[in-house]
Length: 550
Image (cartoon, rainbow, N blue to C red; front, side, top):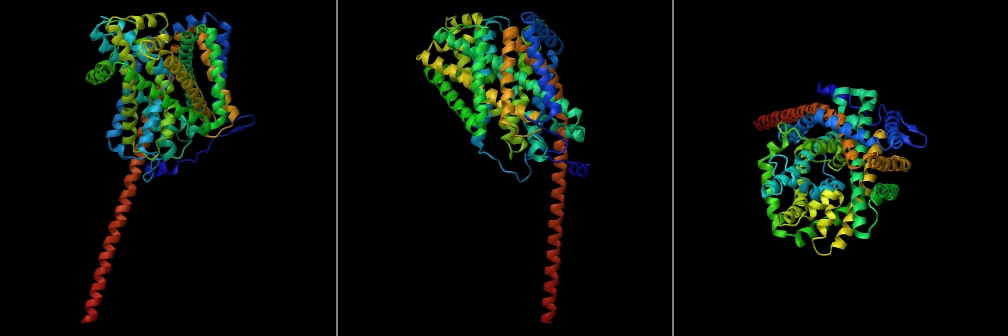
């Protein structure tokens, strides 16, 4: 019943018992999440080298068992968000009927792009297309022009609409239940239509614990990739040893930098650094477009986009059923799990900046703008790398085979000012590491404090160091394979959470629409009654004047 749902909307702090000692926490979420993560760090350090095989076995088991499940779910999430945008739900406004956007459309687009830019795209924008170019998953014949377009098509798939469909789902759900239903800004709130006030009990606590663990391991995956690339860049520029020990030291140094940003707060730390990230990334992209093969980049961007759209369903639903190789488990399944584990982090960010947008505006903005800019980045860096390979140079493929983290720097070496651009690349990866860590700390802190946005600084510092610790032990315990396993392992249970989230969001939006329609009917009825009353009054007044004249 609409009235009943409306009546039961609780206040933001209802049902949340807080512990105010050293930290301002919601204990039933904070402590289980902290214990799970600390135990993981301890066990990985104690067991040591054998953990590599453990991580490999876990990844193989989950990918083999649930690979097709990930493929189906991620397609479902994308099509569900598109359905919401183009159905009658599309007119619902996040924040209520009279809510106005907090940011201009241009500023909103810029922030959406910043959410999509990060360590991952810097790490994989050169390496991934080269991997697929050498071993195309469908055609099987590598290092041809056909392999080049197939390679870019799959790279577009992994970084395009499907990824942003996941983020749009979570961001819309968080924004709707926070702004329209006045619930805490945590994952548990999204399930109010199903659980009711039980979101404040153990079911809600379990959902938030899963969200924290998934987010932290998703972040750790990105931080691990980032520090491997920083180490590779420093080795390329200054000859600093490329080793797990160096990477752990770098994680410690950069985590301290992230902690300083956290202590400064959102306005003086996170926001300022994020703005500079985007400026530097824009200059970096323009450098490649202008001094690189400009016409080829423009042409390939156009052709790659056309190929991606033309083969959208083929690529999106491909499960290598008849090949029985491990390609998809190593690539598509890893990416889908990684994006799912990142979704609370990115979703909360885009949800917080989207008040006043309609569901249709939100979905189309989140899906289209970051995707187009990401495709341009991939065509500039990945496309240029493939062009070098097609014209006879094998330096990029050799770098990818030897050490995937060096691929970006080897590409930059082929163009002018390579020392400067490589140094900028290292600084950009480091800066994205810092912003990912401090922003992630704020998101996890919000969830573990029951939805508060201004929890104590010490709490944020704890999570910043925890993220760095998990990234370090993953690198020690298994390198790149362990990072992939972390994303896949935490992505699987949270994928189930997102599946239920679709149904809960649908129910919430349906209730909102019914309420708006009832209010509109009442308004129309009052307007009709007033019009009728005015007509009667006017008629009586006219009749009285006529009688008076007679």
